[in-house]
Amino acid sequence: MDSSGLYREITGSARSAPGWVRSAFEVWTEYGLLLFGLLFIAVWWRARARTDPRPVALALTAPLAAALAYAASELLKSAVDEERPCRAVAGAAAPLIACPAPGDWSFPSNHSAIAGAAAVALALAVPRLALAAVPLAVLMAFSRVFVGVHYPHDVLAGLLLGGALAALAVPALTGPISTITAAMRASGGRAAVWFTGPGPARRP
Image (cartoon, rainbow, N blue to C red; front, side, top):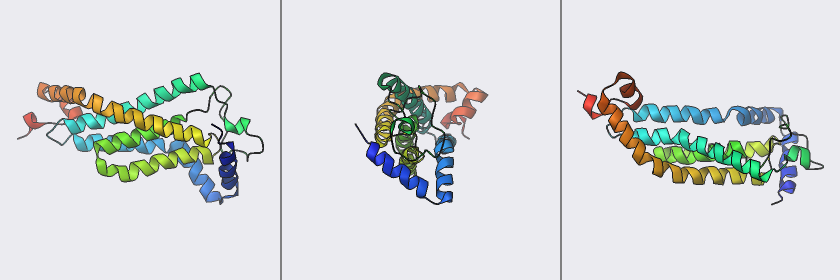
């Protein structure tokens, strides 16, 4: 797939954008994944108060799905060995951030895979979060092209890879983790009860 023409258009627009827009995208592309981490923590903390262990299990599968997406994207990167567009595309505008070192391959985008997995997993855990998580994942993917370190097809593949893996992993893991959560609650151990929430056995 050749999306170098679209890459040139987006990076050219990035260079002509106002300074505050460029700065916002630079910050978002570097640190935006931390917001998904905060959402993971918020969903887990909220789930601890629920009697049913399933919400806790769903909350715990979200970061697991993101980690799985990262691992899968790294394996695919090693198999494809696609050079970064900031080195390979002639006539493109200079990237807004430093071009990754040689050997740090381009296809697919790790950031997009993690964001795609996080968005789907969070939406499965708390459906109304889809209204925020999905646009944030798309924004993360777009930012990787905007700052000049990925082709458009890299980020699209990353989103699809991460989202698909989360859609498969979350249902598969929720049942076993629910069982473990219920057992931890029933054990009465202080650390276990703090981590999983009190559950029905510990409520007055």
